[in-house]
Image (cartoon, rainbow, N blue to C red; front, side, top):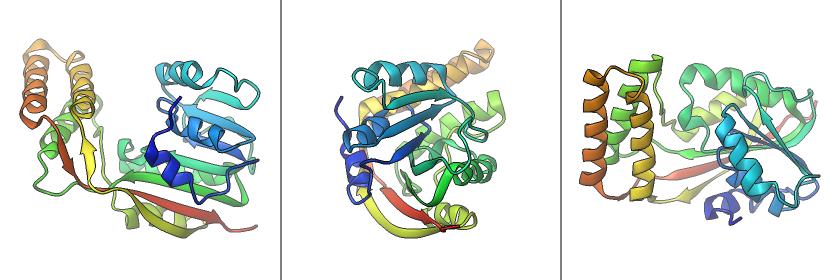
Amino acid sequence: MDVPETVTAALADRQVEGQVCLEAGAGVGNTTAGLLAAGAERVYAVTDDADHAATVRERVGDGNADRLVVLEADLRATPLATDSVDFVTAHGLCNVLPPADLTPIAAELTRVAKPDGHLVVDDYAVPPADAAVNRLFALENTAARMVDGRPALTFYPPAMLAAVFVDYGWTVERKKTLLDPVPWTEAHLDAHAEVVRGYAARLPDSLGEPLTAMADDLVAAIGSERTGTMYSLAFRLADG
């Protein structure tokens, strides 16, 4: 499968070949594919979503059975052994984590990482205040809070994410920009609208139908937008 340019750029200056790797929050397997393509000895693709796990196996599994392990697990408590992973990636993960989950996940990623191990965290910066996409993101968060009592999206400044991991013994080695601006395409916006539709389906029609209509209207009104940035942070864990 094709590896997105953002993944390739995030891994370009890292030692991946021969490493045991963990993709934290495997999604559809883009970073898993990038790690395998870069020569990883083994990749543990961890996700708590059964559909995502199936997608990763389907998209990346062929020809990689001896190097790929897809795990359905909570990132706050994975089945991986302590000090078992050379290289951890979290590509586009943190923006779907509420603040309360950042610390336990950072602790777990630190637990499984070997001393002197490496970590790359890639995520989206806070969009500009005047960005049209903010209206759709706000609607997504409203729908999420109505159903789950927590936001679907949180955009963290790079300094904030860096501080979370530094508290667990990681040292920042570099920061770079992956996208500037971020191209929010119609497909990307419809994916966010689909999240709203999913939450709306779990609400009474009197609440869910207006949310769905608002999401559809926002996608049509925005169309696409180029705004904001995506950044990459690289860390090294203290040796012992």
